[in-house]
Amino acid sequence: MKAYELLFFVNPSITDEARAGVMKRIDATIAESAGVVDNVDNWGKRKLAYAIDNLTEGDYTLIEFHADPASIAELDRVLRITDDVVRFKITRRDNKE
Image (cartoon, rainbow, N blue to C red; front, top):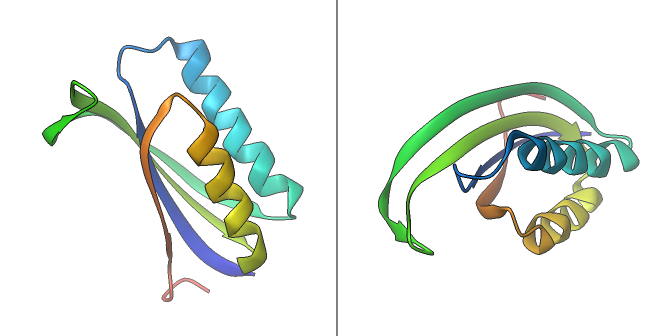
C-alpha cells in the first residue's frame, strides 16, 4: 500500500451532520479497498484566494491514509459526485511509506 494525502474543502455554511456525512463517506470508500486512515487534521475555515461558486471561505480537512493505487480512482469518483465537496486534491506521499 502507498501513502496518500487528501485535502478537500466544503462550504463552511453546511451543517455539522452534512460534514460528518462527507467524512463517513470518505472513510467508507477508503476502508472498502482495505485502506487505512492514518490521520485526520481539520484546518477549519480559511479564506480562498479567489471566489469559487460564490464562496470566499472554505472549511478545509487534510486526511493522510494508506491505500492501493488502484483504489484512488474510486475515491476520486466518490469525491467528484459528492455535492458538499467543493474542491479536493489527492497526492502521493513518497516520504511516508
